[in-house]
Image 1 (tube, rainbow, N blue to C red):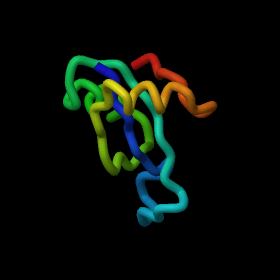
Image 2 (image 1 turned 90 degrees about the vertical axis):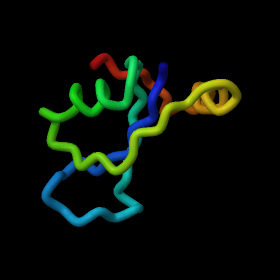
Image 3 (image 1 turned 45 degrees about the vertical axis):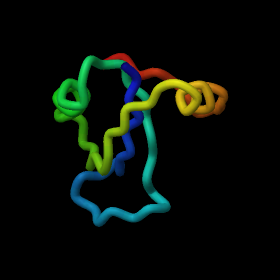
Length: 69
């Protein structure tokens, strides 16, 4: 399954919507995604499973790049 992870790059800063970034990861569960990213200095806001038409739409974006976890 593909997950879209919304995050801030600096864990110690206050969350600001304009600084939110996204990455895409393939994993079996949300827990697996969070476990793989726990050593990165990210403040994870939300992890969302994406599939079907939403995934197809995201894959058309120039920012779509599947991360190796």
